[in-house]
Amino acid sequence: MPLLREGGMSPQADRSRKASSPPPKRLNYLKLGFVLFVGLYGAVCALSPSTYRFLDRVDLVFHEAGHPIFGLFGEFIGILGGTLMQLLIPAIVVGYFFFHQQLYSGAVSLFWLAQSFFNVSVYVRDARQQALPLLGGEDTLHDWGYLLGRLGLLGWDQALGNLVYLVGLAALIASVLGGIYYSLEEERDAG
Image 1 (spheres, rainbow, N blue to C red):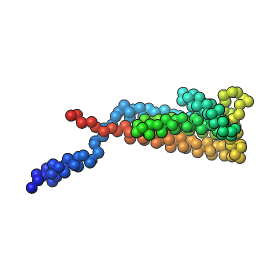
Image 2 (spheres, helix red, strand yellow):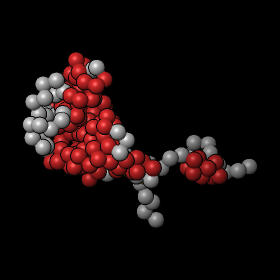
Image 3 (cartoon, rainbow, N blue to C red):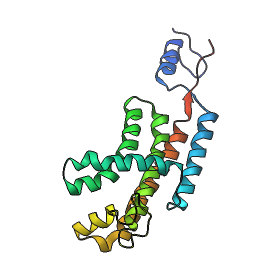
């Protein structure tokens, strides 16, 4: 008769149970602190999306680069290309991290995509008023004024801008919750 351990399990069954159960997890406080800092910065961006901040400068570079790149596909796509590139670059960064199983980094970098959506929402909501200062001066074409005008949706600029903002808010929440979740790491055996 096999020997039974406490709880009525044989040593073989106990080893099998330990091998199949997930290892215990511990919280990485450095990762948690960073994701909370990023979340706080994201909340500041969400509460005042029209305030120009550091990442907006980064977004602007990609936005402007998107116009000539996507402009190869025609005028409409070229003008939309600024926003596409501004959202595509952070999305590619997020995708890269998730594809390479760097889940914490993917979750945290999702914040950049959220911030970029907040930035775009301000631009979309300005389509009719066109009060934002644009790179190139007063004679510069307002991307979203043109795009929504061509689509016959100029009267929807506020609703569409709010929708873009909500997508950014969802991405920010996912970023923070994902970052907190992926701050949990498997404990390593001391032996």
